[in-house]
Length: 113
Image (tube, rainbow, N blue to C red; front, side, top):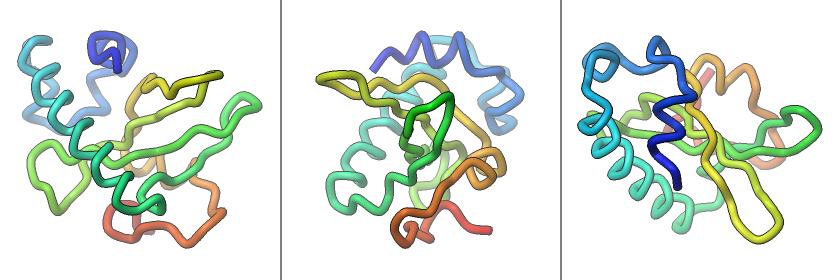
């Protein structure tokens, strides 16, 4: 997990309002906690990870709950490499919904039409 890369590659307009103007260090701290929580959530239920198809490969979308654990604020894009997964960027929930591919019934807790 390279949070600095995620912050650098994700346009700030995608973040919810209080997080757009945060210093990089503070935002990295919040993102690390949210990513750890998302990882635990996927371990409990694989349906939390929603697939998307992008540039010839399947990526997974994970919910990032920044301010409220009951509501996702962003979708973390995770791609598989040979022996590991790498988080590359974040999408807004609208972008994630448009890109999602339904292979299994999605976890309606965070990505809703």
